Image 1: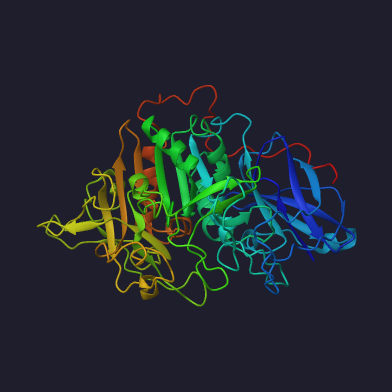
Image 2: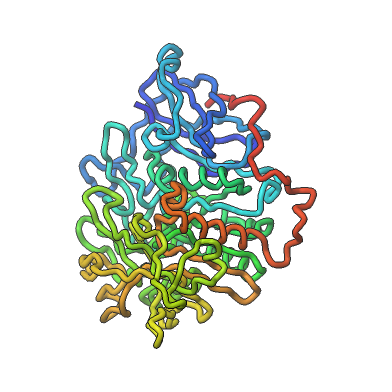
Length: 516
């Protein structure tokens, strides 16, 4: 048995990575891979002595469950990264056992990203922006919220959704909410589903991309200055106030954002414990009951029932006007009709050949035949005009400049979400009735300062694009990246600090070293 987690999920190339590991093996080593066109082996560490550390018990005495609220305090091992390694998302594969056993463990392949005995981290460049002007934000806060801290042979069910821990106040200056440590093991799931296929596609297409985590965006007000385009990918549910402030400032300064994601910015989080944990007052059950309603860290709900800053003011869309599909096996089945095309003459549709019916012909659907819509999706309050074109009303906080490019009306929607026990959109604790028809919504808007926001309105956009399941989705993605990857005021010359070759540098130099 072996499991672990990183002390911090990002490190600058050439710096030391702190990896916390618990194992019943006498020794272990770590193999490093980089996610790119394929899963590329980079290096293998020296041998480390193994130490077994029991997980902390659940504070409420839940049988079989560990605590999701505290640092698991596994022994720390420090490994050097190389200054020559290219920026990217890296996978650390923990290999237990002595040399003969380790040699028998095959290297991971493209289909082996998901699993236990794995952890990932972001390697950031020594000179931000030198490799590329696109910054890919890995949604790490959301990853931690759903991480059950399970192992290969054990289910601990410890997360914000499984046996959460609620602090009624007093700690952290009286902060009330569900507490969650980011220093817990749990393996890799979301990285394999959303990120790996999309990152592979980005590199196949030659896009020069650098990477960051939610914590990087939270902590550094100047993080986005070297970049022209920020990417939010997949499931991006948990945001801090600082993340929103820094993103809004980026847009106001003429930078761009592409939300290739959904359920985006649904809950607010408050960083605690030296930024190794967070608190969020959500509506998740504790021992089968609500610890507190209303859940005051809902972004859109007006105070005192929430934050009062609708997420769609930033993204253009909201989960409360969208939906999801339940299933006994995630991510479940969902509609395959795609987005009904609107404004086919918009630059986002250039080269797709898709039609919107304005020429008297049929109306096409973007992504038809693929599971593009869902498994969770966001929408804007809308109404049809006299020509049958869906237009955002702005009644829910969506900017007046938001242009709906594609829409899929959700019918039926998962009915359980009308029930107050779920506390999501249209919950009777917050709204007396529905805000209108819900629809997955793709669109674009501009902000004061000149920045542009594109929103895909669905979690699985990067999956369909990355796997190249629909030519239209691929072309729209390229149009978005090609247009938004350079600010309007950025000179066309890449400049001395930006390589003209968009492909990644090849890794070189020594592998990780050092001891616990």
